Length: 353
Length: 178
Image (cartoon, rainbow over all chains, first blue to last red; front, side, top):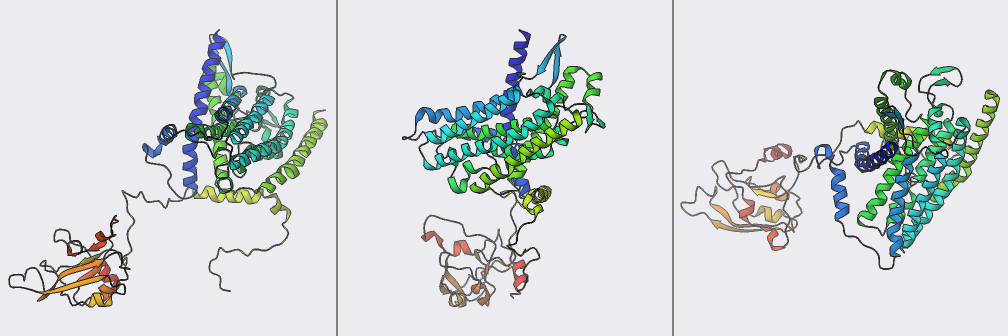
């Protein structure tokens, strides 16, 4: 019973955190954009404009809800729902921190520790493209359809390289469970001879895999430089051209949740998840609940950094052309990731015996 | 060819080297540039609270000046109307009556002085033509309106009010008009 209450509370908190982060990511995006372009950004709603997300949200809710006459009504409503639900679902398997302890019982800071955690993430993320595809198809608009087609083909192309770069990580951890992958990045000897505390991160073993994964994450989140599904200059708004009011809001919102979650997953896979230098020392002197919160803070900070990184890239690199995108995905990233898998396998067999 | 800036780069259609083909160093360089911009001072002015200063030579809405005693400078000589390339100025002169010495500086004054702001091209030739130090262009902006007729500005709008005098000393200094 206690575990059920804990899990439900955790789910609710994660829900709220994801939504809150997404809301403030919209504000952050505008602020980052402004700062990088020597502007100020939104600063009228509240001090430094921190109430801007509320204003934006209110605006979204107040707008007229338009469902095109020629659209498929059910699918039209279903599209943003699927996209939102799938983007929220991925947070379930991420180990957000070390275990908490109430009344002598340990509770893992993870909604579900399933042994195929990373596969679950991949499955749900691929489901997300249905949200885009259904939305674009149901709009009955050629621009929306083009955007949806681009989104799905892009997702499929980049998921391959993403999966391949992931295989190298899985080969090192020997497990598909995200908990195992994170705990294997804690204390240990870096490259087998440098003793480190909480810094045995995969990034030091898999730099190429990390770069491939990162590029693919950009494509999966439909972020610049791979934001072809919604590029304004060519497709008006891409798959959400016909959407208005909060249905559009759900699409935009889910995109920011996706960014946050993929930031968290990148941190888990390559940057040690909740591990940070000194975690094992802290857990010996401090209350496990406080340690859990600190470790959660570490993962949160890493995820937020990646959200910032996504924005940073957006205001640095222009958009790819569609053929360049496909060329990069199939002819460069996929072979590179396969080479990475081979190299990892070879090094593992030589050094691990 | 003269180089106009030091930042221009010659585009060469040569084969890219391996380092260039990687793109990542170039992207890192670009990211460094955007990151440096985060710490630069914003060029924004918070508009309604802070307003950008006009250049001293800005040519906006006209003003008909009064002298220190509050008498109108204009003597309706008509030189401004002659100089005006857009023919925006209409003047009707009148003779100063006894007892009006505190209103008009010279014996003749403009009974009617109208500038059609839709015709005016704000060239400033009127102020250059004026021998009596009477008309100046200022840094005020002609306000928008819905009707064309309201853009014909009469003396009520052009002549400066004594309790709200328009400072044109900066403009005089810049232009050496005297």
